[in-house]
Image 1 (cartoon, rainbow, N blue to C red):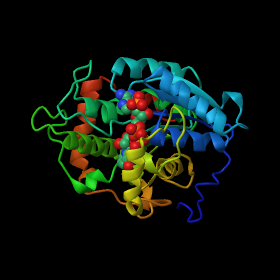
Image 2: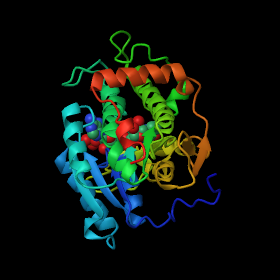
Image 3: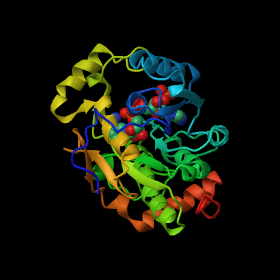
Image 4: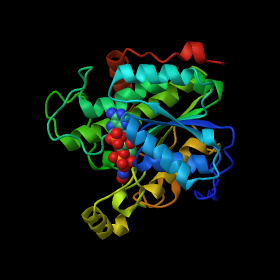
Length: 317
Ligand SMILES: NC(=O)c1ccc[n+]([C@@H]2O[C@H](COP(=O)([O-])OP(=O)(O)OC[C@H]3O[C@@H](n4cnc5c(N)ncnc54)[C@H](OP(=O)(O)O)[C@@H]3O)[C@@H](O)[C@H]2O)c1
């Protein structure tokens, strides 16, 4: 059972551990990476844009000057593009065992009209859920080699609108909100389903889900190239202060879910008061705990990405 005395500002020593973070150039992915590096870990910071990911790496070097020069590496990875996922995963498999995978990248401001990726999938579903399904499956061997962990990003929005994703590609009834919520229902059910399948196949990898509450950039420290909110964003985000927190604090449950050895697969972690606060074990919404939805989304993910998780090759690895 996880300890009640966890201090997110004093993490356990992570020297020797290696983590991969998607969407590491901004927001929660950036701050998670920085917190891991401060604790001594090596972080493969991935992002889809070379300039933005280099700026984020430079920011960590500035802000954590005592970190080893190789504490961060960068990796180009666009989660909406399966070709990009395949080549990034091949590169990571060549780098040795992986202690943890933070499946963070996400479109949080979805397009008003339905858009499709180069692979022909609805953009938000592909970016937030399908790409991460393919990435995690493709990195099962390096994760198993380190008895590692994957963390999927859930969201409070899945309690507000409990849509059943019967049409996960939203061919009909697209709206930006529906696309976002369905994608987060998908990532959450994939996290639980991965846990069940990993246990059933006796693979030494855990799958955990975490959410950051309500974390806004206008209440987050300004960092050149990483977080540069406008004055009006600062003003409006600060008006919501009682309900919100910084992305720095929003990263706390994500990082705990990734590194706390007392956390078990299949758990759901978030901020203490749901929207903000220190990490706490929570219960996710009813729809995200549906076995039927999980089975369906797993099948769709297998079919659409063409990636079958290598459970048999990984068991006992
Ligand atoms: N903030 C919250 O309150 C909140 C609440 C619940 C859940 N979440 C989840 O937390 C995660 C991060 O959110 P955030 O608030 O940190 O958002 P953010 O500040 O907008 O950062 C999103 C990150 O994802 C990256 N990204 C977007 N599309 C990508 C793609 N196709 N390939 C690779 N990277 C891509 C972005 O990169 P670019 O800079 O290149 O766009 C950026 O690094 C998301 O999964 C979101 O659903 C956030």
